[in-house]
Image (cartoon, rainbow, N blue to C red; front, side):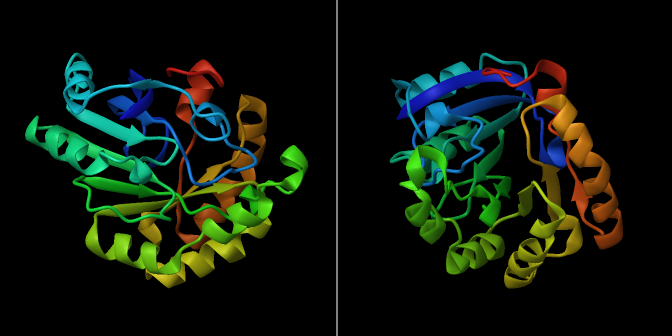
Length: 227
């Protein structure tokens, strides 16, 4: 598998925020979010080819039983299913981070699904050449329904404006997701912007009964790799 990085840190987002975890970041993505914070797995994918055995060996070097398989989009990685099976055999708690556009019969304890909203469409980046393709792929209703019916999940949305709430509620309704499974997170890679957006986003969460998530890793270490 092509892996961009493996590192030990704290889970920075979602329902397991703060949990020490090993991150296995696959390289390659079928989307091109304008605000993507890991362009080295999407816009310009990079990494090294590792066997499943090598990946699991590196994961087990860390003193935690939590592993997060992320990307890019890990569900398009050719060996994602056998990788998750080997991680389960090793006795690990597995979270998979996905945009929810592709189905694969993975093994996991938590499927962290982050459907991409209209705020992700790259209308201007690189002259907008990825905009139409990204917009066509970013939401796959039947895939979302299947994933949320077959796995323990959370729906984690990147929010840049209060106007995003209408689309979030449409997706939530599509999946019949209860409020406690919906997690809203401010968009941004700078602490000051995250704080500014967190103030109004927290109020929206209180009004709607949704969960709020910080971006803990950005608050602690800034916008850099390996954290």
